[in-house]
Image (cartoon, rainbow, N blue to C red; front, top):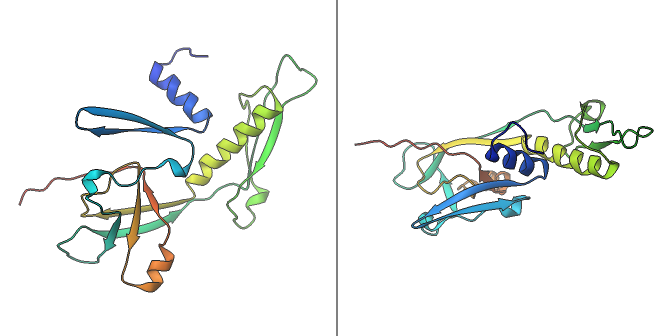
Length: 188
């Protein structure tokens, strides 16, 4: 139900509750809304990337697009997420559930993130809601922060880091999603 919130706030809240995320892509003469529910929904680099899907790591100066800072940061994730709510239509049964996290951390299973009221009315709704809420906190567990001189990095796109070092290439073989970008223009 929408009450005391703007249409955008309502839509954003409903998307979050259903495990959806969205972004806009802007091209000449068109603006597209993209909606996805998994990592496979992220886009490949746009036409402005000129075919570049990988960005070089370079410590120091370089005449090519390069990443000059790449740092992984980890956040604590509780071992499970639980929630319950009271449903006046079934007063003898309180719908609730517990969902374990897929992120394995020492002693994390002893710590639970509990939510009441969980805004659910059936056990099926509770299972779905807790699964999506668990996935949302797991997404923040392993994040990459960086800076670059690259002109092809765009928010909502996948980015792969390449390096000359075989050890680093193995460590950073996975792709990262750019979920926010800040640009600075410099006159020389």
